Image (cartoon, rainbow, N blue to C red; front, side, top):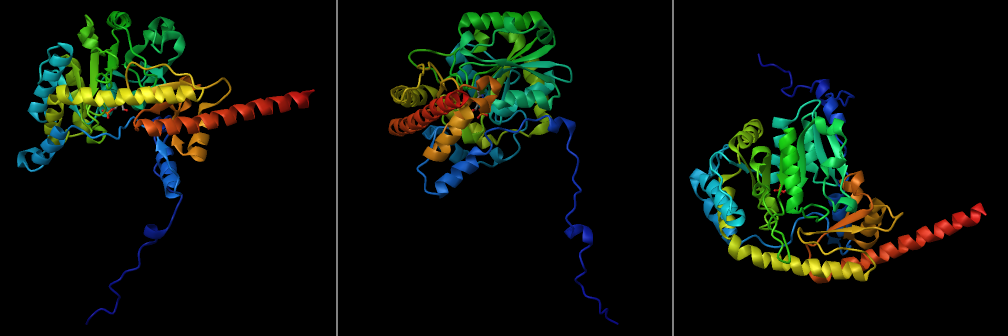
Length: 426
Ligand SMILES: Cc1ncc(COP(=O)(O)O)c(C=O)c1O
């Protein structure tokens, strides 16, 4: 006899019931600071949806095209079956060779393509992952502040302790190790440095790099040198590799990226370079976390790197024009700004008493211009805001005019409220 029971069984209660049950987060997670700029993309979308003429000078993400050669190489490589498979840590070997050719032509340095290069899915993951090999509970990592978030990320994920060093004009935005108390320095296992610097646009003199390398050697500190902007020097300034400094190879690992040099941020293509022991340690960590970059992208990376001579000078010229336009426009609106010798950023001081977050929020919400408040890079960044010159000169000028309006209004309000307070006190 056929069953009369319905074939649709009622769903057990635990599928539909909403409960307070929640997997418990780790203690480590609880220590992660919220990313202070996380809300910006959603706010940008809301403003665009509302018809606002948004000028986005936020992320270091140029609106320019990658080299044609890279795009063509990706198209071709996407049809080659062998390049659709796992890359693993080794990856597409010609990419390793293209990197060593680049390191030679650009810095005059020789590296072994198989043992001293680590292909990366963008330099960010490598900057964070390297910490797992060198840091643990009780270890200290020196983190400049403001700085790129991956340094703190790697440190906290490794359960190590960050020592924040505020980058301020007093030291030309350099981390001066002599300023750091001995107890912090004694526990330091990793020093993160980035010159040319994001966000301050500072550059590091060779004499400074020599001092840093000497200290890292004396104290057995791994120097993680982030050189993402090595190809963005202006006015004849040519940023060095840390490996141009004698003795650096014993203690340093250097990170490079195709992102800024070739307008390829979304491609996620970079590399680390170091002596085999240090490169091998990073590769080993990555073996637990990823299975290599898509080899068709690495093949395109070869084409990009090989187009360096023809592509980079023209691209830099565009950035130099934008830099000059941005400096002129912001100065004309009453802001103080130096002419940066490198990077795609202006790090602009705000008058005393104007909080960078409030300034950036008002500028975005009332004028549709996105800039990054210095405080978004950590306390050490307060008093400044960053613009990326990633828009054409006319848009930069328009953004500066709007920023000038906001600054004047805020200064007026501050003066007005001070006089009110003064009156009420009297
Ligand atoms: C200082 C610095 N390092 C590294 C990166 C990461 O670049 P990518 O992961 O795209 O290679 C950036 C990106 O903005 C950066 O500003």
